[in-house]
Figure 1: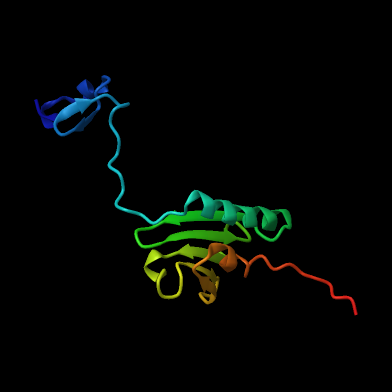
Figure 2 (figure 1 turned 90 degrees about the vertical axis):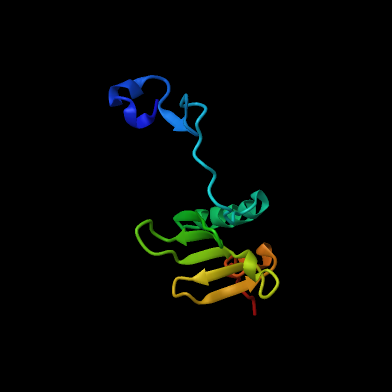
Length: 134
């Protein structure tokens, strides 16, 4: 029996999803895995979220968004939730051998810093004001 031949009211039972022509209970059916995406590792997210936490505590940043795309992963930082990101921290593995996979990009699109080590790249955003005694 094909799904097109079943009355819609018959789909109210425990077998609502169908995969390979075989009805499956809801708990067994899973959406197909997305095509290979670039993601941040646990260590990378720890470094990024540590910086984010310090900036939120200082009142400089307020919100963030994470996007995992096919060619890069992006961590966007917002000052207010309704505006454009003030910084984007990007991981692009295609640039690993040339300029480095990590970059910090400002709201205007200028690259603030780029490199192979995430900690050094994040250092561009982690500058604190220091008083110099004369």
